[in-house]
Length: 339
Image 1 (cartoon, helix red, strand yellow):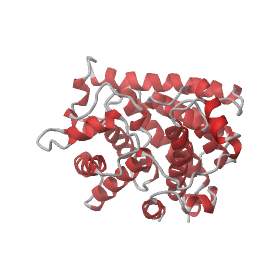
Image 2 (cartoon, one colour):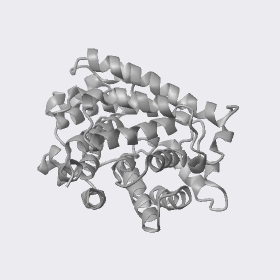
Image 3 (cartoon, helix red, strand yellow):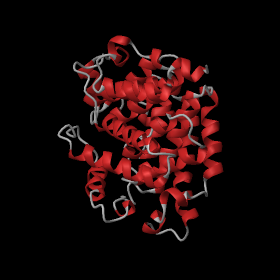
């Protein structure tokens, strides 16, 4: 039995993701002074009652269900994945529970995905790199048995169904890779260097099999130049993150160092910053993400995915984990991938 199985990385990551989402939901769109005035000292923030989540968790579950359906039919590939996830995204978009201030890009793209007679690439919002691309990608870092090519291609494809900007694709790939590394026990102190190496190795690799002709919707002369644009923006934010980890005070709004998280690369970096500032204090990492001036639910959601992947299911207080919304769905996927 491996360490990853014992610590239940998938259950830990999905639970942490939802807890961060629920903790950050009430503070989204507020600045830090307002949050402190309303909620009190940030290190003592309590999980709301009820612990309601946002579209971040809903879309993570939609992606997870789509991937499970695709893999039930055989080896995960672009055709079966795109169709299964497309159906789940459409169902999410139609759901009456989709009332948690979802992103405009997701709503617009999911509406276009209903046109079954057209390729999914026509629904992709090619100029959008909102964090909706990578807030939901954690399942691809948690599913066992995928090859590197499957994980990277699928991470970019799930982004491209809604957010087609190359930075959205690269940030989604990096987020899934970070979750995978942490689930496998990579040391957080070396994580940024590992992510930087991964970005450099993949900088000019366009996943034709998974993305098809998506790149032609942009204005780049070649697919390699299209995807390099995204990796270059991710490399730049990783450099900012490296400096921030060394210099930022834990008492400071993390968005001041690595961005407010409304866009994909900033959500990745600021979520990682919260995790790396409090590697051994996962609940504090969520609280720091929730008490920030940016997209607090997505930042805390990503911090929770990273912390849970690294520390496992036991990272989270039982009294919190047991009452987060969609707990049964989160446990079902977590148990499947932890098995």
